[in-house]
Image (cartoon, rainbow over all chains, first blue to last red; front, top):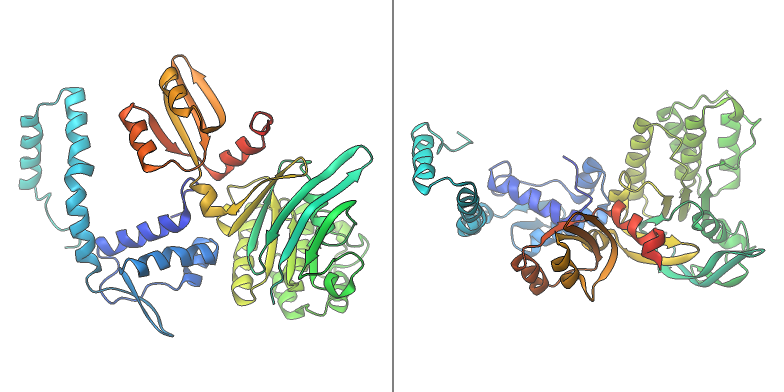
Length: 128
Length: 292
């Protein structure tokens, strides 16, 4: 992946790591790359990378072990999930309903579609 | 070791032309800076003054607190790689590298060797027989292996092909991490290198346009799109860098960070807000219209 030049890179780094924690690519107490490794891997300024990691330390998603490195906080995934659940209806469902209304899809049809998806196994955990 | 650079009211006049027209800024030591400007904006002149290749006609330059011009103690710690390379065309590559080692106390000849191999520089060839890309790569080797506390590359990597440029970026980051020092890279092609910069200095017509943390600049431009009158009302009082119109729709590029209430007001009014790339911001900040 490469970073988008249109928004602060440190913010994109923090978001990417949060996504990795959320989808289970980074597990609890797993060590994350050092800022220098991260900077070299993605060809970004080390100070910029450090800023992204500092944000995650400040927010408590990562913790530091002196002389060893940074690790994923045990409760990071659950906290992120709770946060995203809270925002799910306003961020995902809200715009979907607005779009459905604009193009003329009745709510019944959406519900029906979701029920079929659910039967097909759409609710499976992607990590299984 | 890291050296800070301070420039105040710097002027350089060539006859009737003010190549540098009252530049002032302060660069802390130990960071990677991008010096951005259009062709003829004064980038090369500024770097030449910093490297003590020429003397300013007004104002001051301080590197680690001292004037660099004809100051051996300061000049020794500065390395400027210009596109021309500043080496003898008839010299062999290995001679160029050996001479650099004799002239520079901070030179790392093992590292120079390794870099020369990585960039496929034939040691027994003369400089004049090298391709443009190889000449640029020779400049890169001279700059990196100098390990000078202040190392400046004046568009010196633009002649290289993409794989060599990426190799340069990798080497630059790796060596900067291992041996922190001040780097200044001048360029007008931003997209590819922007992520390497911690801070960015933008100049135009010898004047300072912006000096910011790169990430701060990335957050600073906003594009606002919507019906002409709604956009005009919203943009009144904001710094508008550029605008485009298509029928009844207008898009403006606003410089600055919008407050949360401004974002809410824009969305309520049905306006579309979008980010602006560093390259676009640079174009707007240094275009004829953006300057007046």
